[in-house]
Amino acid sequence: MKYITTIDNQEYTVEILDDGVVTVNGKTYQVNFESIDGQPLYSLLVNGASYESMVYATEEAWEVLLRGYLYKATVEDEREKRLRVAAGGSQAQNAHFHLKAPMPGLVVAVPVSEGQEVKSGDVLVILESMKMQNELKSPQDGIVKRVRVQAGQSVERNQVMLSVHAPEA
Image 1 (cartoon, helix red, strand yellow):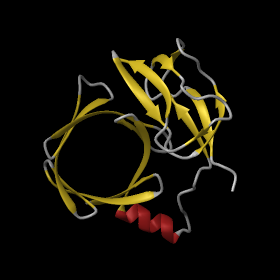
Image 2 (image 1 turned 90 degrees about the vertical axis):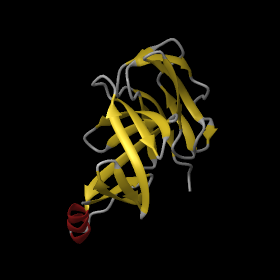
Image 3 (image 1 turned 60 degrees about the vertical axis):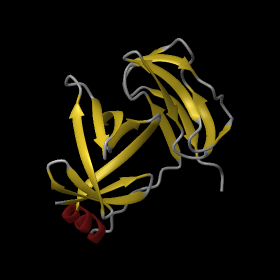
Image 4 (image 1 turned 60 degrees about the horizontal axis):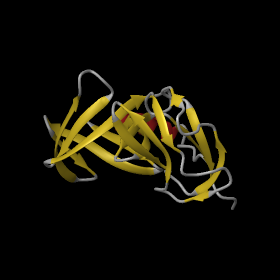
């Protein structure tokens, strides 16, 4: 079965070929993906390289925290995509990004302030959870509109920590 995964408005065709073998846009990878102790923390091996990620399902998408970036991914099989496109549906582009805590934790630092211009990849919040510090980075260029947390504050999973609005066109 082929799946269409959309991340940051870019589509990837993912096909599961065999146990531990997948293709992404035609390129083959050896993959091992396992939950650690039943938590939303996963161990991911891709062609021998090791990664850890947090993965949560929301109503709109999958949220994946990997290497400091929080990705929102939608996944649909080929049939679902054909039906959505035929019905005139499309993925809405969001001009606003609300950084939500991907897990409960303690805010270590907020290196940005309201009104500050940020670029994709800039660190927005440093969050400590499960004895690890995670740099949560902006997925888009924009302006920090509202900071709702401060260093030393505890946050719950899915709590909005700050908002980044797309720059005015």
